Image (cartoon, rainbow, N blue to C red; front, top):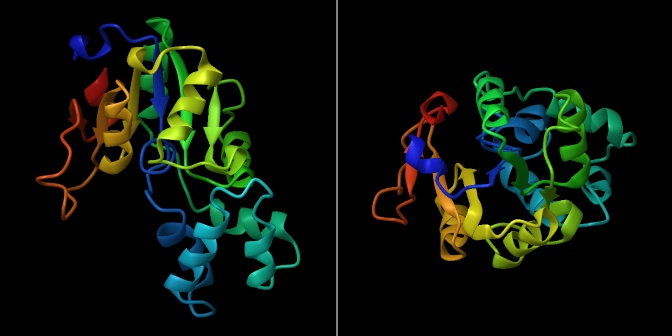
Length: 205
């Protein structure tokens, strides 16, 4: 795996499906928490409206009748867990003097919750969330925003994501790509081919 890091100065992480084991905030968190009260498509639609809303997630909680967003947010986000292999990979990158950044589609308040819960405040620089910047993957503009904030050319970046569409845009901008593929997904074959594909962080050590 040594060749994967040649010419790389920063490793960019997606959050859901990479740092956090579950890939979907709605399917694996919001929907199970509210199942029986609201159907999946309704909650998914509400989430899509806020994921790049710089005003935050208030409209979602209002729609589903939650008077205390902070409590409601914690109630479903605490379902998610950190990939147990992350810290070993983090230590590996630290020893190699690689910078670490985050580029993720997520409301800003949800990202703040995860970073506080996982003690990540000082782990990543920069952190670019769709809800902070009003852009989202796989749109090209959010990758360019990350480049601007990091001060490192995208061509010297390695991006780890679980969605091929996000990786394809990154690759078109010169980023080296890693598909974090925990399980086989229907429809993956015949699509964009990333530079590398791994089932776990251990494969990147």
